[in-house]
Each structure stands twice: as C-alpha cells, then as structure tokens.
Amino acid sequence: MKLYMSADIEGITGVANWDEAQIGHPEHTIFRKIMTHEVLCACHEAKTNGVREILLKDAHASGRNILLEELPDFVKVIRGWSGHPFSMVQGLDGSFDVLFMIGYHSPSGSLGNPLAHTMASSIIHEMRLNGHRISEFTLHALVSAYYKVPVTLLTGDDEMCKQAQSLIPAIVTLPVKLGFGNAVVTKTPSKIYEDYKPAVREALNVKLFKECIPVIPSSLTIEIVYSKPTIAYKYSFFPGAELTDESTLQYNAANIFDMMTFIQFCS
Image (cartoon, rainbow, N blue to C red):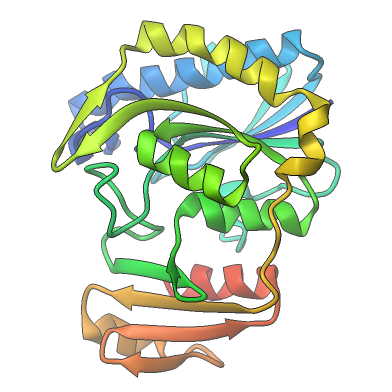
C-alpha cells in the first residue's frame, strides 16, 4: 500500500500561538518536535498495517519543519515549495492508495483555532467555494478527489475535525485540541501519540476507501476576500478573475487544477 501524508503545524497538539509555528523562534523548536513525533507515530502504525511506501509533504510555512533524522527509511519527504498548484499535496497522483492529513486547522474566519486561516494568512481574510467558507483541508481533499485517492485520516483541532466529517462522513478524525478565543484546551502529546495507533489502524481499513473520496462540485466558484483592497486590485489582473467588491476577487474555475492554479497565483 502506498500512502501520501501531508503535515501542517497549526493543528498539532498544543500549538496556540504564531510564535510556536514560526521557524527560527525558540518556541518553534519545541513544537516542530511534537509535529515530527505525531508524523512518526502515523508512519510507524501505517507500516504495521500494510503501508510499504510513504511520501510526506512538510506543508507548513517554509516547508522545513519536520526533523528528518527522526523518520524511518521507508519515508520520502518533500521539503520546501516548488510552486506547483497542488501546494500542500504536491506530488500526489493516482498511484497512491490513500491520503492522510496531519495537524490541519480551522479555516480563516473561524473560532476553532487561534491560528485559523486559509492559505496566505498575511493577506487573505476569507476564502469561499460556491459561497461557503473553505479550509485548506477541503481544498486539498478536492485535489485528492481529482485523482480518486481517498482521504481517510485527519488530525487537528476539534472544529476542523467536525468540518472534515461534514465533507467526508466516513473519515477518521483525531481531535487534539479545542480552540476558544485566543486560547486552546489541548490534550497532552503523550496521549495523542497513543491515540494515533487506533486512528491509523481504522483509517487503513480498505472498506472505508470508497466512502472517503470527496465529491467534486459541478461548479467551482472561488472567492478570495483580501485583507486590503490594494491586494485584491493587484490580483484582479489574473485572466478570468473579477472584482465583486473592493476586497473580493471571484474566479470560476473549469476544474480542480484550474482552481488551484488561480489560488497559487493569487495568494
């Protein structure tokens, strides 16, 4: 079995402040270790349950968070960013049997996580698909659907887990913390490391796979609400994009690749 794993940090156990997610900050050193260990738990349990090959995308900020020396030899890692439109699942294709998303977080405009955002947190106030607020999880789950690869495991904040289940009711979720205001109630790393074992086992049950491929909407209208009108104006020159108000850019995508290309160039 071949597994693609995408790992972010804002939905990792305990993370409650941007300092903890910023490379070079002393607190990031602590939480990159926890991030690495969550990934490691998922890798080891996946290997025990039939996975023989894992491609892991370090999908936070610089793409250089996970400690490589901690990972087993059956894992390959994508570090940094190539600029490919598929972004946090770059390299995913139809050869993979399953996709796991580790450490994912609530979308911009949500109270589910103090670090809630969608894609470029510094310039995007909110992103919508067909009129509904959208998360990074949903965007990249739709890329997975483009290749008919099931998304069977999501770990992250409680609100993101609930939203994932609304998109894919059969998905296995592992909530690690509950966000409220500018704080979180978090489980301990040792508890979550143990919880990965049953979650991964369940997520690799092939009976789930057909039920965990999201349905791609028949139309794909993306709206990006920017933090400043000047940013919206700048990106309004993307071919086919249209300003619907001073801060909102709308684009009707022909397919998932087209949608992700627009987001890549306009965020």
